[in-house]
Length: 603
Image (tube, rainbow, N blue to C red; front, side, top):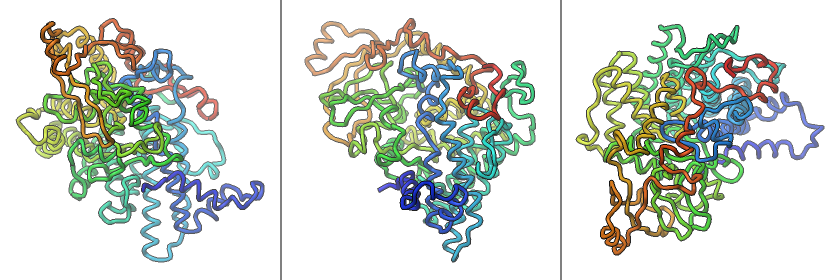
């Protein structure tokens, strides 16, 4: 059974304090130093408590939509739909990610302050305390990256609030913050054990492996592009998309990313497994050598991500699997981004829904949903229909390989043999190691970079990175503008979509149990409507005919039509040199007087 991190921490607090009246409680400072950090077991509770604030739903929900993979299925007046389509204002920006990440930073800061003051009774305790301190440094870095990649320059607390003596905190350069995150992760790597050393039984906690992977991720963001402005004047005219000014530091950052990935690969503890197995394992709480870091979601008290419910397939309320009601859908063009034979397509994108009678009913283009977290693959419903006990994948080995390839290409201004090897490991797995299907690997710098950008989309779809990955490459506006034009081409059946199926015939078959073996419903495709005699034959054989551009009642009657409101309204707020970084919510600024006058200059 999985560790319920949040519950353990809260239980620890209750056990320590329930016998006292509130007014007799010691101060927060005394409580931290005298009660929590007086032995290793309680110190571990504090670190576990920090993990409960390393993830929240908005990281994949509002902030995970609005990409060339994923769109919001809710109405245009809904704030989630607005954020997903770059219609920002200072009241519709969610505060939950911002608040949760800083709560985790505060937990980590308390631990970083107090853990070094503890005396170990023996070598075993010393190793445990080192590990706990390493986890704290890693958590602080990971949380700050989650804030910086969406909000840019933000407050940078490095000591507990009780020691700071103030709740006021102003913006700090994102370069300073990310460089600090790199230092934190480098410290964490020195302190943490490798997964193979046996001190950590679950990927729900940091190991040296995971810390190296997150270090590579932070370094690539620190080296990349971002929407920036003058922090002294906040002049709207100073807003621009740019990398940091220090070219030498950019090179160092790519070296840090490359070396971090190399350390993981050379260690040999992680590897790729069958793509489908990655996600079947994930939804059932099974660990494997590919998934390196997960956010734990088990039980009623630490399970508010709604993974598999909000971001999964559709399952009818009355079906055996229990209701799953996705509020995010797979962009129809994403389905066609996969080459023929790429096994990832039907894992990432679910081409069917579960009806009330448990039959699998095919989705048309505008109704396709996210398949990686589908409820039919679980062994049971879980704690509740909206608490399916599905962990969130924070870091996978395939991501490390693609970061390795990217860093090598940047450092050598072209793909080295090593870069090609790392890239092809991921791509080959996608085609079941059939090299004849995977296509040629580009040899030039720009073409290889584009290949890596594309491969990250195919490999890591719906895992929460695409939006800010596009921003760090400096191509968010261009990519989404092109995507919308492709969607219109698909709706019209033009260009690369001239020959796509307009109808598909399939058989409605029942899903009979959990751990459903089906990945995709098979079909017969038709570029034009079947003739009357063909339809009669299909009916005789038990086929159902589906119009692939038809209405989708599940998603506000969306239809793949060039004039449909959901297509014309897609990315409707997109503005280059503006939306790549979100404004702060007005409430966030009001709650922190140090941020007064420090709003995104274009809002």
